[in-house]
Each structure stands twice: as structure tokens, then as C-alpha cells.
Length: 301
Image (tube, rainbow, N blue to C red; front, side, top):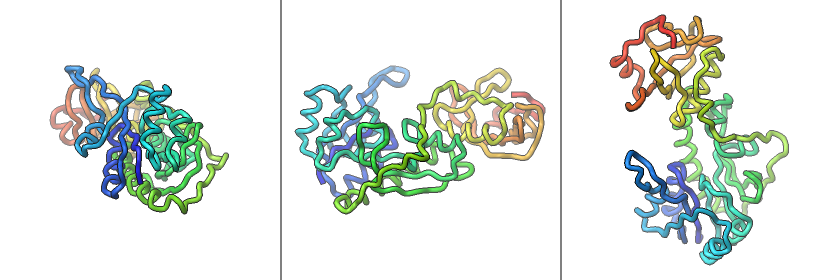
């Protein structure tokens, strides 16, 4: 098929690779524009842009798709379908209607649960035991379109957003190739009215750990916000990111370190911290972290 691919971050790259490997013609790749990054604040290509360049594909990065000129340029690509995955721009109706088979979105949840911007984070933070990928026919509403294919997967009890992100990205790549192969025969399934939830964008204000909360909530917060923006706490006055954890046995004053393995008391129960990151340094597994910073039992964080 002749495809317009629309995606921006790392999550989208395996999908682009899968479409190319499957032999589809990529008429153009749309992604977010390069933006200043790093210490020098030089413009940095998005992951999809960089990969598309390596593959020798045409790349476009309009700031908006609302202008008649941008819409005419898109329509002139004469695409069979557009594949959209974490693109980052709202698609006007003229864009949605331009390809012969419309626009297909790869969404990282089991719709209608977790429509919106942060479905992977919210699934873990809410304690969901299952999530998945939906291939959805896009329409004007926010993730409201009918679903063509879906595939579920369990969420591991110690899984972080980073780990689940990578698994779902690969799942999405396989599922969209399957959907395109079967497209004429797939019957769109309208989303049910019951069970709709919205995955609001993550606010950095959600990242500070409140140790008076139950351990199950603290553990979900740490795993759900890893690696970005990263749940954090203060240890001896220094801000430290917490990037992996698991539930543990123990009781104490909230925020009290209970042993030499960084088990920390919560309002109910305790969590064991497994991966941490000091300001200005790389992330470290717990044992490596403790070799550089001895944190004794009884310390309050």
C-alpha cells in the first residue's frame, strides 16, 4: 500500500521499520519539527525524523496541518492510508479524509480505557493488570473511533512505563502490519460507551513521592513515572529520582529506611527501591547506588 506515516518519538520507530520491511511504499513521513535540546540548545531531530533520514524517506515536519496549503500538500501524496502513532498534532478533518482508507491510529491501551495522551503511565499508576494495543480508525473525536484490531498483554507486577512502552511499541508494529494485510476484510467495531477513561498528560507535580501514602500507591507511582518525569524524593537534602521498585514487607514511620537494602516504610507497608538516579548522574541499580552512598537503616527520606 502507499502509506503516509505520521509519528514522532521512539515509540513510533519500530512501526516505521515494520512498514518498510513489509514492503509498503512510504509516500512521506510526517513528524514534529526539530527542537533545541542538550547543553548547546542545538536543534535535534526527532527519533522518527532521524530514522526516516537513514531509510532515505521524504520527511515533512509542519508546525500545523490547519492551513489549506498543508492540507493540499498532504492530499497530493495520493495515499491509500495514513498510519499514525504518537504524532503529536491534531489531525483536521481534511487530513483524516484524504487517504482512500482514512487514517489508522496505533493506540497503546485497550480502548475505550485510557483515551488520551499518557495511556501507558496511567495504566501502571492505576494498578491495571492488563493493557494492550488497538488499531483504530481515526475520526474527529479524541481516540473515539472504531477499533479494527486489538491485542491484550498482562502488565508485570514490577514493570515500569519504560519496559511496557518498549513491549507495546513492538506489539503495535506487528499489529498494524497485520491490519493492513487484512484491511478490506476488517469490520470496524464501535467503542462501547461504558468503560471510557481519559489518560491525562503527566504533570510534573505528580512526581514527588508522598511516603504517607500506602505502599501499593507509591510503588505504582514510581514504576508508572519511570523514566519520565521520574518519581522523586529527598535523601539527606538531595533530590533523587526513583526509577524502579517493588512491594516489600515492613512497617515504620513513613519515609523511614528500614534496612540496608533501601526498603522504605510507607503509610501502609513498604517498598524496596531498586533503581535510583542522583542529580547530574546516570541511573544506577540499588547495589551500585549504595556503594557510592551509604544510607543506613533509620534514615528518614
